[in-house]
Image (cartoon, rainbow, N blue to C red; front, side):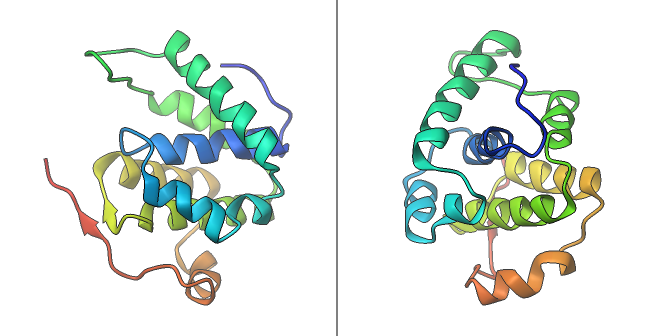
Length: 150
C-alpha cells in the first residue's frame, strides 16, 4: 500500500474507501449518503481527493492483497491496523469513526466485514460507542441495523 502522511485528507479518504468496500462492494445507499450528509466535508476531504484516493486504494488492494476467489479480495487485520494508524489525532479518529458508523448504517444492514472493521477501529483507537453516540444521534444515524448471517 502506498504511504500517506498521518492525519492527511488522503489517509482519511483511504479509510472511507475501505469502509465503503467492507461489505464486499460499493453500495448506492452508501454513496448517496456521502453526498447527502456531506460526510466528506465533515472529514475535510474534497471530492477530487476522494475520487483519486479510492482509485489508488483499489489499485493498491488489487496488487497487495490475497484474492481467494474470482472478484474476492481479503485484507488482513495487520494491513487494516496500518491504515488505522495513519489517523492519529483523537478528534480525527472520532470523526472518522462517526463517518464509518454512518456508512455501515446507510443500507440498514451490518454484515460481517463491516462489523469487523468497526470493532477493529474502536479497539485500535481505544474508542467506545458512547464516545461518538451523542453526535451520531444528532446527525440522525439509524439506531437499528439488520445483521447478515451467512
